[in-house]
Length: 195
Length: 162
Image (cartoon, rainbow over the protein chains, first blue to last red):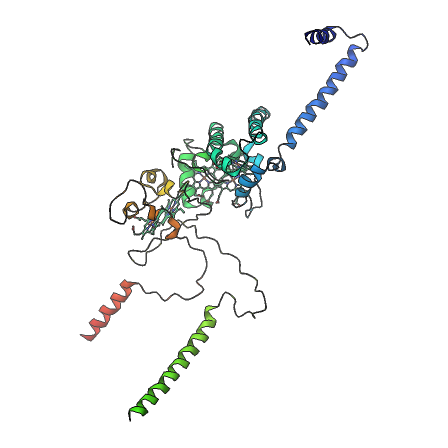
């Protein structure tokens, strides 16, 4: 085994005798593009709602719950899909979130979250992860669609306008502080601030 | 003699029953406004569901013990064993931030009149007693008369007699 690795290392280190430098540079470049593109395509594929809910835990719980909310049907006809709220737009953030999500996929394959009961037991933990993330990025995913600068307070209800023009405008609070449970059922909230 | 009185009262009773049932049936037609006298074998096109009134303006209470109407929308406000969304605004220690009226102290009382630290179990499910309204006309005319109006009418009648 060790010999094999050493041999491979030597081959890799030796200057190429068969291919020109130019070919290697161009070839490497093209291979890079293909790899990169393939990677991003795979990433994009896993970034669709179909992928998210292809796993039953996500279809039976979060998706079914989303269906009854304003983000599924509304007068504007704009649908928020799972990745709209759960996957960052910036590439580095996206990769980081994907790494985290693969842990959740692992949980599915190896049966830590394979029944509604187990999902319910984990819900608080999973929800807290999302709250922490959205708190840290100032509810970036919400703001991708809802832009504070273009909110017309006069068109909002009094309750909304009062809260938005004070704590939200001053930056003291962010969307997720007040809008927990906007898309799914909430877990037991004992001990969560403001509940 | 007695017999003829009996016959008379029987006749009167029959007339009474026939008239009341006639009134009840013709009135019954008005109550069935949801179908608007659509023939029984025809499916009526359902009327659009009116919006929930979300005016944030408190409504009058018709009598002192009335649970106040909810002046805002409550779509997807979760109230179950895990959470009570209403209390995240209406509980004692949330009112400063939410600027919502606190649930009155009766909500913290058990049936023996003792005050509890948390909302009493019998007041936990808010929607049992409190409901929002829809922006629509009532289907059946409401003939409710406020007791203040009743009292005023009585007083006015008394004043007229004197």
